[in-house]
Image (tube, rainbow, N blue to C red; front, side, top):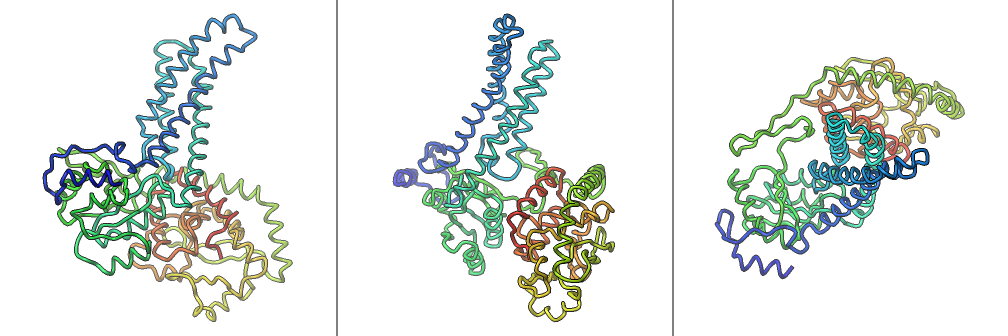
Length: 509
């Protein structure tokens, strides 16, 4: 660290906007900056190379060991070996072209897996075209054997590395240390999002506030991280980045000096090897809806409007019918066991029907297994003062109306299973926003009504992100994000996460 400090002193870096003749320093040459990320991407590169090399060698091995055509195989083994080597090189180039080994593309969300698949499919397409043009049909062995096996192994490998990262992150490990810089009003949101969603990819190591001292913003930041270093010295942000070993500076929102200040900040960071990341002011919008085009050095961001009709919704309904039909057939024995448990708890109906607000606010009767005493709704008024829910939601951790079996059913979300009947009838979807009561809808304000633009779901982002542990604003934000940005892949991911939440409940009561 002393070497870095002396290097900065020798360069005599001044305030933002001051010209210096010091040559920019590459991040790889600055000790302590990006070491975790570089080591991790090298591991990914080596693992990918081994997997692809092994898969590319399969056709040659198969031909060499073919007893039925041993003589022909021995004369063609070298051909397949050379072709396998070239395929390995081309595949690694394709992975590099899709940035599958770069920080920012790994360890967060589904982007890493998507890029792997796209790079592999691009190579498969190129190989298919080459075979068609040259007539070298022997290469089809690589399409049928090497590509599918390697693609599956690559996805498993990346998932395994991701689990290793998650375990390391519990002890404070992260691929990249970031310093957040921006207006006091914008910084808390960016810190909150990085902490919640980046997992082991980013760790906030410090904050530099741009503007006058703001006690309210300070207290909000301290509430998120009591030990995080705070500074107001924007002119010395490069020194703060080096002092805190930050690999990147994340700019939260617009700066005091406008676009010029952002450009000058980039110039200052060139001398530290620290990367510059700009947090977009576009929130609640998925990447697939945003396109960037340059116009004479000015990037224009095109944002596709949210759509709530079209072909995607036809496929969503088709999936809902198929999934709910198989679920109801497969869960029939489970339904019988749950019904017996409810009956053993005492007299009363097996199912509980409750009116909920569906798509566009249309009422429907939602099916659930009964988990409370028969007169539960009559007793609700007596418990309102003990409400522990946020916003218009009523939640009570130790609700006296819940039966013995009901507590277990609610904890593991098994009481929700009859809602597949609602999915089959068309009132609900497998994945969607939480189905609200009309008393909740009456309390909606402003854009909250947009959560009614889609059919409510048996599961959704709310259910797999903490459920009752979330505050009202966060629940609304998740529902609105899903309604405007859902995809088939996001639905499948939410369904997978739902299975995990049912086994290890979080916020269910």
